[in-house]
Image (cartoon, rainbow, N blue to C red):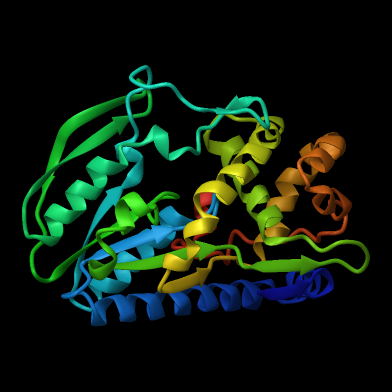
Length: 307
């Protein structure tokens, strides 16, 4: 795990923002290129690529970036979203998260994992499959949305928190590469507890939910303990299935996220404590703002959270 002092991050943000951003982005893209190179070398034997990681790890963007890097190596990457395997609301009972008093939306029971496993097995065998599509407005699964068959020079990338689940990985380990994405860095303030990786992911999620999902910061806070519970139950036990890892953290992102979130989180200090996020509350007024609009590249993973 990498550690960055808050003093270092603030210094870079204040005095060489352009170089700081460029350096962070190069580190991220170097990891993506290394992952793509290994996938390419084994693509004939392992045409299935399973992208896993906890909430707000940048799975969607990194999945796309890996696909682009594979294209440069002459390998076409088809994409399957695990979100399309959600089951129609009302066709099953959403299990409760009794610890936190909310529905367990992280549960694999919300998804048709056996169907996804069957589809991946068929793809490895060279067969054509009919993919579903999940309509999030109506919360309905639409079958036969599109067809897919893999050619010899193609791989398929699937991203989702349940991609390493034994229902999927159990029969496909011989034909799949597992890639684990996470924020694997921490930020150390001058005094007090460090800001752990899961706390940095909370900031990403709070920003994204507020900007794009019509969900205020207090709602993200309210759901956070359940999100963490789901990660411990459904992701952590299977992390060992990963062949490759990527740390998606960009140290300069803290200077951007806090500009937007700090005024909102100052009103939620007690709630931060209850969500095991007290160190975030302690550094709200210690992070230097950064003028990033002229420097952040269009393909940055951070756009997944800030637009």
